[in-house]
Image 1 (cartoon, rainbow, N blue to C red):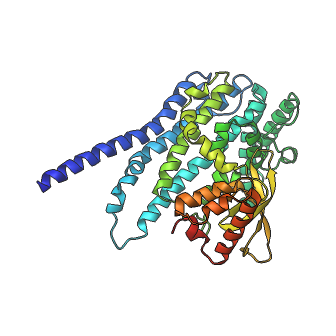
Image 2: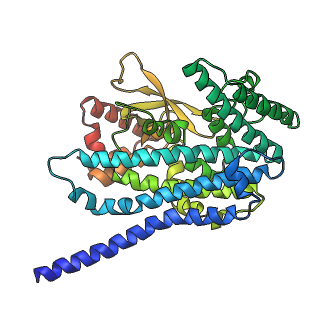
Image 3: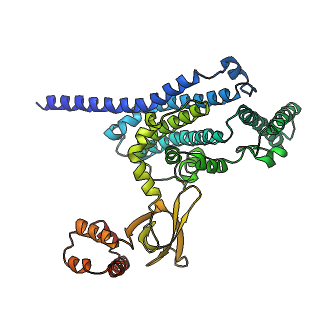
Amino acid sequence: MKLLRKFVHLFLWKEKNKKEFELYKYFALMPYNKARDFAKTLHVDLDYYKMVKFAQLVDSKDYFLYSVMRTIKKTCFSLLHKEEYVGSLTKGKRKQQIAPDEDTIQDEITESMMDDINFLVRKLVETLVNVICFSKSNNEIAYMIYLNSENMDLFLRKQNDFNAFYSIKNLNVKSSIEGYYKCIIEDIKKIDGDLWFIDSKNLKNKRFSVFKSIFLRYQTAMLLANNNEKILLGSSYEKFFSLPSISIHSSISAYPLEYSSKSVQTFYIMISLLCDAIINRSMMLAGIKISEQDSIESKALRKHADKILIKENKNLNTGDIVLAYGDLAEIIEIIESKFGYQSYKIKYLTKAPIPTILEDYYPSQYIVELLRKNDPQKFLNKLRKDDNITEGLAFLKSRSKKELYDALKATLIDLDKRKLLKRVLHGK
């Protein structure tokens, strides 16, 4: 009987695992198929693309978009290699294979997966930024300038290498730089206004890199992105570009230690959604209208968009009592950026983390709401529900809104000074 139960358990585990694997395989294959089908519509000479890969006046947009689709397909191949591992994480399969004395191996395996995934995230975020920004200059000449700029950068980097390590300047490389420079300058004259990707100063001085920094391009993209793209890009440059750089560069103390197997699975799906957003925007650049309702990223994000947006913009008011990065504070000023994100100036109500800094600024995702000045009853209801506090509630409810707010604020300050606030808030 025990053997039968073990067999049934193993069978059910395999069936559940099979469904898990199929789910992650879908997230890898869906954008691949979409990118493959879209790439077939582009006017690209594959032999020419493989041989030289530089811009032509005719179909330069198609060559650029084809390169983007190749990036998507390569990403999907990488996801397929990870599909079995990611699908098995929730089942504890990997943990069972680790020797008891190797207690750090699970963390190291997870971090190695995050290194790979962060590399993909960084590359995809930059790709999404570029295709979003091209909505400002969606014409053949702009694409040709972009592709010629990539090639000019290639030769500028090569010349820098020759000069730094061999103390020479190669004349063939110099000739290529001059050729690309001449083409770029002549084409820029045909464009109205500044191009979003060109660093005019570096281009004029023929200095690497002729592209504006990804930080500046990211800001431009955030002004042009739709709501789904903003969610995928994240609320800041740090979250989805700067932090992933840690996985690319050598780093000792800066690595985020909170990564877990759940992080691997979340980012795996995020990569698929990034791919789909890039394809959708690319198809729009090609003149193909995309229905948001038919888009996989819209369907997936619609379930979570409200929660994410509420987390980013809490719509708090001055006088509201909050936890600012875990410390009790009061909001004294509200700041809204040009990207639509809210931040708050706060003053600490008890002991400040650094005694000389009594006030500070935080983006809304670092703020946790406790007590709203215009609705103190909301906090009272939470206490009644969570902590089953009954005595004195009738008396408090009879007080005016201001009296209730003042009383609750004083109580929160007292609890925090006695180091009891978190215990009360969490019901411990």
